[in-house]
Structures are given as structure tokens and as C-alpha cells.
Image 1 (cartoon, helix red, strand yellow):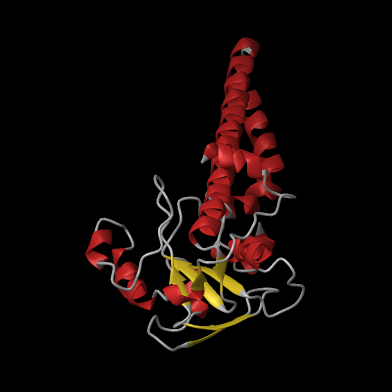
Image 2: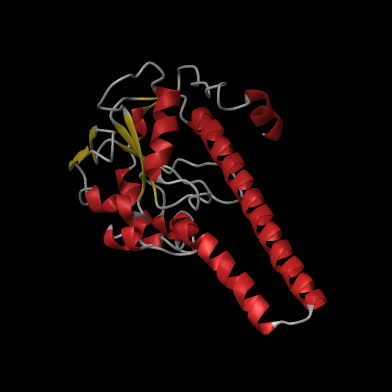
Length: 235
């Protein structure tokens, strides 16, 4: 793992930092087999222990797979409800929220791509029209202070976005329930039980509902990637 350490990457068991442990998986497997051969003499006991290790590994991968499927379905539901609540959005708008229930597998940067695919399907070059920000993540390191009329100029990897803190829409997507778009008059105290309650106090006054066009037809989810019929059935 020396190349990852030299590169300054954080190595851990959480997604997505756990991928940096893949290079050592072969060595770990060889070490476990060698340790079993050294310590355990009975063949039957070795087989039982090996079966237990394999079963645990299979169960862990199965659980991770279910977790990813659930996150994918939550992401699909998120964009389905978003197009319902926000039929169309003015270009140059930031959608911002402290967090989302499926952020274990998706970041604000990764969700910016489908956001633009939905609301700017003809877009083919920079700057992108929309940006999704998770205010409780590292994205805020490249964001200005959360006060009105601050220029936003972000270039995360290949995306370039230029906007303003006065052109933001605040969204709230709970683990259970429907997506909401708080207005500037929303009482921040209603989010006191939220783990990011201090962010809501800063974000709610910046909610610019005039960025939403509710009189136009809703934008469509890209059928190439999302089964629209399944989304409607789940709703």
C-alpha cells in the first residue's frame, strides 16, 4: 500500500477508501492459510475454519451488495422526486443540502453528473449548468462562506461550475419520507434533531425559490439508465 500512502490517500474499511486495501488481499489470504497450516494440525478443524472464513466473506459481500442496491434505489427515488418538486431550474443554480441518506456510495460531485443529464440533457461542454453540494462534506473546502452574494467558481475534476450563493436551492431528503424544498421562512428549529442542525441555520435563509419554474413540464429521467416504470411503481 506504499503508493497509496505516498499519494496521501486515506486507507480504511469504509467505502470508498476500502478499495485501497485490494492490493494486500492476496498477501492476507496467503498469511491466513500459512497460519492455519502452522497452528492447526487436524485436517477436519482446518476445513471447518476455512468454511467459516469463506461463509463470512460471502455474507459480507452479500450484505454490501444489498446496501449498494438500496443506495441506488434511494438515488433513483431522489431524482424522481426532485423532478416532481423542481420541474425546471434556471441554469447556474446550486442545489445544496447538509447530507443525503445514500451518501455512503454517492458524493455531491458524482450526483452533479446525473443532475445535469436530467436538467440540461443537451449540455456538451463546460461550464455545467447545475451543481449539487453536500454541505457536510469536503466539498465545502472549495465553497465560499454561506452568506448571500458570494461568487462560486468550482472546478472539481472535469466539471467547471460558476454560480452565486444567492442562486441556491436548499433541499432536504430524509431517510424516510418525501423530498422537501424549504423556503427562506422555514424555522431552522425544525431541524434541531438533525445531526447537521448548525448548517440548516446557515442554509435556509439562502433558499432561492425563484430559481424554480413550476409552470413547465417536469424534466424526464434518462430512460437509458433509469427504469421510469419502476420508479412510478415504487411511488
